[in-house]
Image (cartoon, rainbow, N blue to C red; front, top):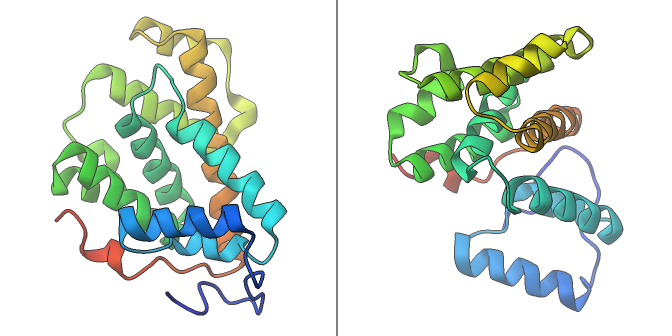
Length: 188
C-alpha cells in the first residue's frame, strides 16, 4: 500500500471503521491493491463514503450505458482535463473491458482516431462538448443522442458520468493524486 497517494499530508483515519476496512480488504483481494483515490479520501470517512456511493451509482448501477461506455466517457473527459490519475486508472479499465489495448490508448490520446460506431461517437462528442462548454449544450445536442438510440434516462446518465469526472479530475489534479503503479501495466 502506498503511504502517500497524493501531495497532501492527510493520513488515513486510524483505525478505519470496520466497514471501511472490509471495503479496502475486498479491493485488495479483487484488484490486488487499494486504489489511491480511495486512500486519498480515507482521511475523512464521511467524504470517502460519499465519494464511493456516488461513484458506485454513476459507474456501476443499472444503466442504458454499458460499463465500457461509462469508462470511455471517463477517459475522454479525463483526456480533455489532462488528469493523470483518471487517464491511467480508467484507461486500464477500457483496455480490460474492451479486451483491446489499442482502444484504451486511443481514448487517452485521441478518441476521434478510434473506429467507433455512430452511437459511441455521438456519446463521446456529447461528453467532449459538455466538458469544454457545458452552457452551450442545447436541445439539438440531446436530439442527436436520441437519433442514435439514447433514451432520456441514458442522456441523464451520460451527463452524470461526464459531470462526475469533470469534478474528480479537478480534485485529483488539485491534490496531485497519483495512480497506483499497478494500473500502468494492466491489460496490455
